[in-house]
Length: 290
Image (cartoon, rainbow, N blue to C red; front, side, top):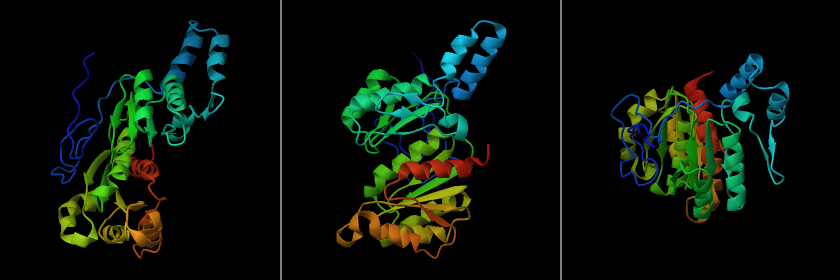
């Protein structure tokens, strides 16, 4: 099957992109999602179902059987929230950590069958990513971020998110943020390795920081970059403390406490290594109220 050409980006994407993840030279850097297709999400599927009942091509009993699977799909070991995208505009994500590859694949399948516009599994090891690709051959993955996803009906990008990281070691969380935000329909540019130990490296990111609808700062160690960026950005800043660091970094607790104690008034903070949460919130801010 011929897919539409991928869009170019200032940030790296899945499977072997060698593009730099640093500077953007345009106001809105295009996304690097694998492709966009006109495949309806849950809302469109339900509208089609109601139209089919009205037209007499589907019986009320068949429609009732379909609707009975809402608002969740019971797999025995998981109750998959197939209704979440309809309620909130963001489909349920799968935390693969702690689940078997078979469970991850089954949940992924349930979301596919439920009509989700995109399906994302995070913290997915190689075995889980292979299991997903077996049930969804079109799935894309990012090994560093430990993410695997299918983009079927992704909103056209609206709004602009800048992601800035303190160090290269923050990369797994950085790209979890990026992938989730792109899947929810916003443009993302990434500036990596711009921490305060070499603060001059932040200079090239400042134009994107200043014009972004939302900025996400990903930092371990002392977490100081969040306060610095918080003093530069015009829009809201989301701090993501990471578990990166030596000794008294305490697995991200030091960065978390530093961000929480920041004097930058426009800085909000998510949990340690929570790229998914930061990407979700950033996309909602950037896109505005639907």
